[in-house]
Image 1 (cartoon, rainbow, N blue to C red):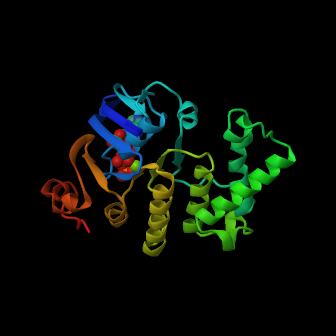
Image 2: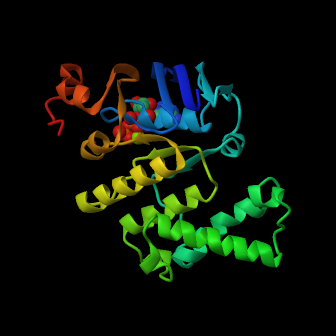
Length: 256
Ligand SMILES: Nc1ncnc2c1ncn2[C@@H]1O[C@H](COP(=O)(O)OP(=O)(O)OP(=O)(O)O)[C@@H](O)[C@H]1O
Ligand SMILES: [Mg+2]
């Protein structure tokens, strides 16, 4: 399968089984959601998929290659990009500078431009970097804010800068950890629309780990639900809305 697959994942932390038999597939061309109540194991699963945690049992595959024991850096080389729940921007640099720095990655050693013989400090490299940067700024809708310092941005705009920085590495699989945290409903909807478009245009495999039910239900085509580390349901947004299991797990909290 093209994209990410995690099979029968178990994760134990001294005495606690945080994940027990969780399987998910995030194929290219689909936005896949992973939801569950507080403490369900979402972040743990995210970290297993990104290579930040090694599962005590189960396997992780990228494009059908077993990457269970490979590092986050190796997974990044295979096309896995991730965003952080807390923003990790250079606050004193502008939006453009933040994105240009991330785009430089394409110019070093095994980056795609380096492989074309465009070396780091050449004129061609500077031109290429500028073009890539401007395209990324445009892709995430930040053209009007390109010269602003990242530290002055709203959380919503900061998340878009972060998304552009992630996309600069040309990932094929993108893992998003609670991208809506700190966003108001309007920003969250806008972020979702941008994600959907970028996914369609680049045939990405997107895995969204999220609290915000509205965002998950409007954006994802397939959703996995876990509770206490166990899979309890999977299906389309409509299936999720109708599922008594999901309703029960969220204990009466309205599922949009
Ligand atoms: N490094 C760790 N060591 C020990 N226990 C951990 C560790 N990381 C997570 N846990 C435990 O594993 C369980 C799942 O945590 P996790 O953070 O994955 O849940 P979550 O679904 O992301 O929750 P939230 O919605 O609050 O973000 C929790 O009981 C948590 O306390
Ligand atoms: Mg979490």
